[in-house]
Amino acid sequence: MYRARLFSVHFFYLLCMEKHALITGAAKRIGKALANHLAKNGWSIAIHYNHSSKEAETLKEELLHKYPTRKFYTVKADLSNMKEVQKLIPNVIKQMGSISLLINNASIFEASEIKETTPELFTRNMQINFTAPFFLTRDFAGSSVHGLIINFVDTRVTTNKNSHAAYSLAKKSLWELTKMTAYEFGPEIRANAIAPGVTLPPPGGNDSDLMKMAKHIPMQKPSGIEPILKSVDYIIDNDHLTGQLLFCDGGENIGKL
Image 1 (cartoon, rainbow, N blue to C red):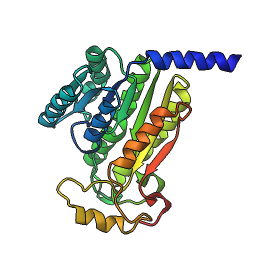
Image 2: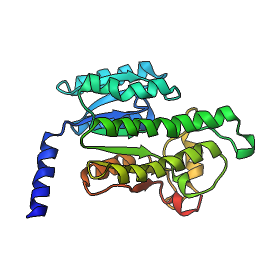
Image 3: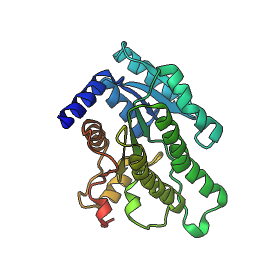
C-alpha cells in the first residue's frame, strides 16, 4: 500500500513537471548538441553562454523555428564572476518560471603540471569547473521542489595524470560534489555525472589528432556525441539513479591511455 502511494505521488509529479532545462555552455560543441537533443525530446531550454553570444542567439532562433510552442532563452553569465553566477538561476527562473534540469556542462581545459601552475590559472580552473557548478547546484536545490542535476566531469577523475593538474582537480571535486548533492537533496533532487573521454577535437584541432589519441583506448575510436546523449537519456529516464557516474570514454578510465 505504501509503495503504491509513493508510486502514485511520483507519477503525478512526472505528469505535472514542466520540462525546463538550464545548460551551461550551451552555445557550442557538446552543450549545443545537448540543447538540440533535449529540445527534440520536448524540453524548453535556457541557453547559457559567456562570450559566444552570436552562436547562442543563432541556436535559439533555430530551436524556436523547429519547436515554436516551446520556450528558448539565451542567458549570459561569466562563470568566473561570482556575482554573475549567483544571479544565473534567478534570472532563468524569471524567464522560464521554473527549472527542472540543470546541466553543468561549461568548462575550461588548460594544460599545466603542478610545478607550472600559477595562482591565476588554478583559481580560474577551480572557479569555472567547480565553484560555479557548486553554487549553481546550491541555488537550483534552493529553488526547485523536484529536479535533476547532471554534471560533466572527465574520465581523468579516475587517474592522477598531471598534464592538466588544476583542471583535473576541479573535475575530481565536481564528481565528489555530485555524490554529496545526491546524498543531501534526495529523493526530491537526483544528481549524476557523465565522464567523456576522447570525444571531439579541441578547438583548432583536427580529426587526425583525435584518432591518434583514440588508438590508445580499448575501443580505439573517438566516442563522438551520441554516447553522451544516450547517457543523458538514461539518467533522465531512470528515476532511481542518483549519485552515479557514467563513463562515455570507450574504456579509457580502465587505464590504457
